[in-house]
Image (cartoon, rainbow, N blue to C red):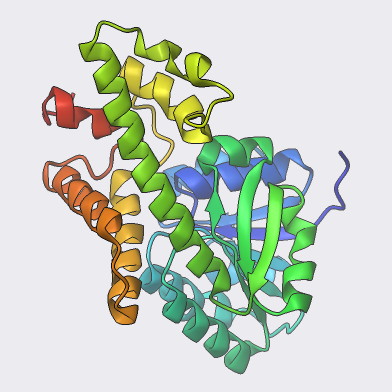
Length: 297
C-alpha cells in the first residue's frame, strides 16, 4: 500500500513509541523523534528518523504530533512543560494524536487546554495490539475528538491501524481503552491459569491455541500469549506495571460511578501483587511467575 508522505513527530519512543516510529518510517513518512533516553532516539535516528533536541523542535518540524507516554502527567509535561509541544511556533493546523493510555478526565482537560493555548486539535487515540501489531500496521485504535480532527488523523492512522473507530468526543477513546484493558487483563489471567492447568495434567500447553481454534474459548490473547506463557518467553511486548496503571483507572472510574466490577478488582489486586514482587517492568507473559516463583531471572 502507498501512503501520502506526512511530517510526523513521535514523542516518547519506548517499546510502543519506537514501534510506531519504525512503522511510520517504513511507510515513507518524515519522522522526527524526541525522548529523554538518548539511546532510544539514536536507534531510530540510525533508521532514518530526525533526532529532535526538544519536543517543541519535533513539533515545529511536523504537521502531526504523536505522543506515546505512560502517564497523564508525562503527557502534560510533553505538551506544556518547558520546550514542550505548545512552545513550538503556533500552527492551528498541527494535530496532536495521543496514543498513550491515560484517564478520560485528564484527556479532556489536556485537549481543551491545548486548543485554548495554541488552536491545535487533539485526538485521544489509545491502541490495542502492542508493538508487534504496530510494526505490521495492524493496530486497533479507538479515537476520541471532533469528527474533523479524527478524520484528519487518518492520514497517519492508515499507516498504523487495521481498525480505527471514532467513539465520540474527547475522552471517548480513552474510555473505550478502559473497556479493552479490563477485557485483556481478565483474558491474560485466564490464559495463564489455563496453561498451568494443562501443564499440571501433562498436556503440551503450546498446543492449546490449535486445539481450541474456532471454539468459544478461542481468542487473540490465547493465540498470542498461550505459546509465550507455555514457553516462559518474556520477550517485551508490554509491561505489567502499565496494565496496572490502566486497571487503576478502571477502578477509579467504576468507584466514581458506583459500578460493581468484581473481576476488575480481582485482576487489579493480582497486578499489584506482581508489581510488588518486582515484576512491573516485565512482559505480560511473566504473569506465569505466580505459579513458578516470583524470583526474576
